[in-house]
Length: 109
Image (tube, rainbow, N blue to C red):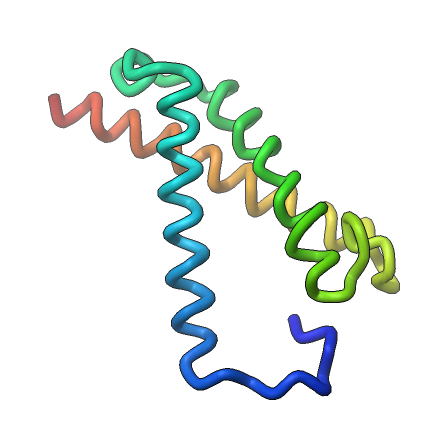
């Protein structure tokens, strides 16, 4: 989503963007582990992972979307609720992925 069309693209920005996005996801996963402790890896909780995923919505709502010119929580977009729901859905999927990763980890032990 490019909101500022006057900004020139940077060579390789898509690769850079996705790489940084996944790196941030890894950092968030480490934050979850530091927050709930290592035992969560052996007894993961779906609710904990989903709530954590929703908490990470703070970053797109208050950092990314304003930086892209969309306002806080996409408030300047024509359909802000659609953008908000998409962000929350993506971050819930991230939370489910954290849970699934722990579930797979436990299965491999």
